[in-house]
Length: 163
Image 1 (cartoon, rainbow, N blue to C red):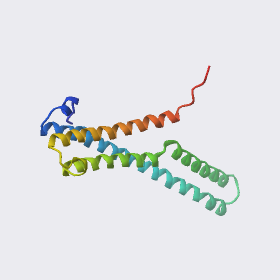
Image 2: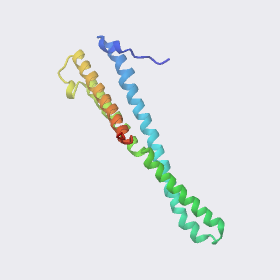
Image 3: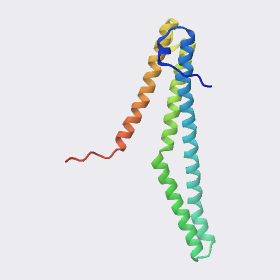
Image 4: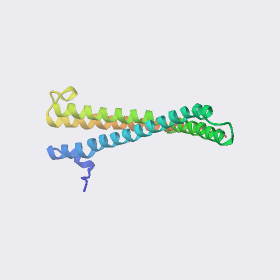
């Protein structure tokens, strides 16, 4: 059974509370970003490869097939498939999502490594001060990421109509 994180744990002191927050909040968020990054990478590569293959088959079919209705139908289907795959890439934006999730995972991972190694912004702080700084930095990074989603959806919304 997965350990659940209570918000109160972030405000408690002690190594157990710190590790609970790191596992339940930061490491889980990193795992989520990495999972979504891999998913979007697979979608991007799959649609890209299929679009290239279907696009490349159009001239092959047109040259080596007799000019009756079946080859024309095959060429049309291949062309339509290429158009659909290319449109899906634009619609679902898998390449940008892949890199965005990868970037967010890397940022949180770097922050966590600096915390554990007492380097960067964590150097020279007590354990409790360093943990408070870790919470502030990681929550700020996750909030920035959430704001980015809000901005993205705001741009996708149709403009409001005036009465």
